[in-house]
Length: 87
Image (cartoon, rainbow, N blue to C red):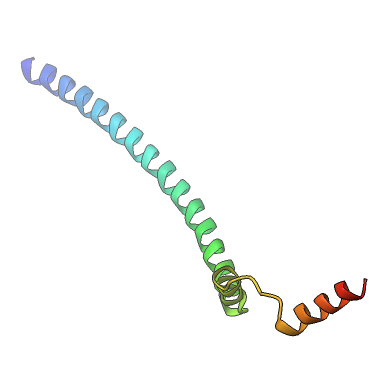
């Protein structure tokens, strides 16, 4: 009699543990799906950046940001001064 009662309690405890394990597995599956979706977005972004670098867009962007603004040349300043003098 005691052995059968212990068996019933043990089976109930195993069922409770399995229920919680299944909940954890479902939560992990949802997290993995979100990670896979995020990794697809990151892969697309990396691919677009790679294409941008290959096309030379990155180099020209960096050069335009680093180089100082173009100054007017001496001949254009002289020409402008002459035009101002004639007016």
